[in-house]
Image (tube, rainbow, N blue to C red; front, side, top):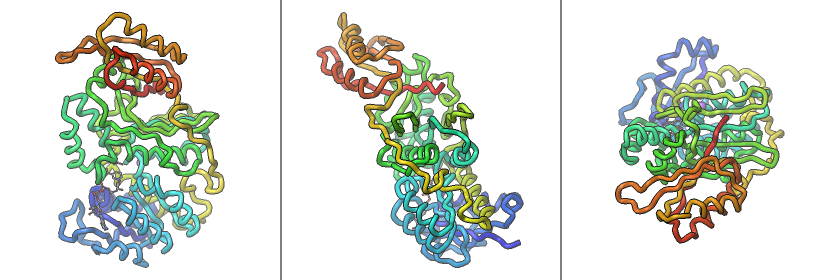
Amino acid sequence: MKSIKVGILGLGTVGGGTANVLQRNADEISRRAGRNIEVIMASVRDLARPRLCDCSSLTLTTDPFEVVNNPDVDIVVELIGGETLAKELMLLAIDNGKHVVTANKALIALHGNEIFAAAQEQGVSVLFESAVAGGISIIKSIREGLAGNRIELVAGIINGTGNFILTEMRDKGRPFEDVLAEAQALGYAEADPTFDVEGIDAAHKLTILASIAFGIPLQFDKVYTEGITDLSLTDVDYAEQLGYRIKHLGVAKASKDGIEMRVHPTLIPAKRLIANVDGVMNAVMVRGDAVGNTLHYGAGAGAEPTASAVVADIVDVARTITADPHNRVPHLAFQPDALIDLPVKSQDAFECAFYLRFEVNDVAGVMSQLSAQFADQNISIEAITQKEPKVDEDFVSVIFITQRTTEGRVNRAIKQIESMADVRKKAIKIRVEHLN
Ligand SMILES: NC(=O)c1ccc[n+]([C@@H]2O[C@H](COP(=O)([O-])OP(=O)(O)OC[C@H]3O[C@@H](n4cnc5c(N)ncnc54)[C@H](O)[C@@H]3O)[C@@H](O)[C@H]2O)c1
Ligand SMILES: N[C@@H](CCO)C(=O)O
Ligand code: NA
């Protein structure tokens, strides 16, 4: 049997995990792929560094261009991360007629339109299942399994590091920095962990999900992005008392007047399955007009869960390597000439419910003054609660949960309320999605 030859760029967490899974499950993988998959070469930064995997049967080099230019390599697996060098290597690999598998969501979200055009031209595949929600086969599910649907909503916990931090803070009261350091040691975090905690990594992934769900070009710069760094345990507690959990969610929603793309902390009713997705686990809810709601759950980061998706992509390439390139599954799910330019909505036009907390002086009549501002903006209130001051606090917290409305209306009400004499500090605003 002729084997498929793989060259890996980067043998860190995901690269090491990928080499291990390919070695350990070699027999099963070749039964599935119809070919033996052989890693013949890998590029590393430091030849002397200890590795997760056994490298005795492959050639190691410190020059990644050697891998990309090696005529024996059929598939280049890019696992070094970053944008500049990774992009150069990927475009060269494509130009050399090689198929590419990558876990690099930043690269796909920012440069995917150009990369896929180059791949289309060369008749090679660029597969990226591991780039979104780690081991969950969400790309394949949307692109193939749900291909009969008009997709209305994709909403997911799509950053493992962030969900791990939120879970540990909530359950064990651990400090943010301490949990982040553990996520880094476990290999979950990005090389620059601000990508995880500021929502940038989730925004990269949401960009990709929105494209394959709605058939639009990749548009990272149009994703509204908030991370978890401003979230306080006070609001996590109050949300729980009101029957909600706070999760960092990526939301891509289609309606007749456009697409919403946003990532931010979100209150979700505690009884929803997705509200109970904890630790490094990810979950993505996809709503199609025919199938209804579907929920896709699994490990969102870590060496072997991510490698599971990388290897699945390698197997896919092996299976299609003999197929007509123009009949392969399209990179962004829709045929390249069928992508459409739907308008992407501005933040003011986003529609959802809101959790709003105001810190106010404990004087009579404040509650009704606040309520009047919501009435002025035609915002209906679902629940109001007032919390007595905690030790060392000289204010009361007034919490409103609104019904669905636009963000523009809510921002106007907040602006009026913040200008009142008895209202302290900046209002806390967290979006609420009922996901039913
Ligand atoms: N860690 C995860 O759970 C996870 C999950 C999904 C996707 N990803 C993505 O996978 C990619 C790799 O992430 P990782 O966690 O394995 O990172 P990592 O830092 O553990 O591994 C990257 C490796 O690439 C090596 N490298 C960097 N520049 C190189 C070069 N010029 N030549 C050769 N080697 C080079 C580094 O030395 C390092 O060993 C990133 O794009 C990341 O976003 C990671
Ligand atoms: N840093 C990413 C890796 C998986 O993409 C996360 O924590 O989700
Ligand atoms: Na995935």
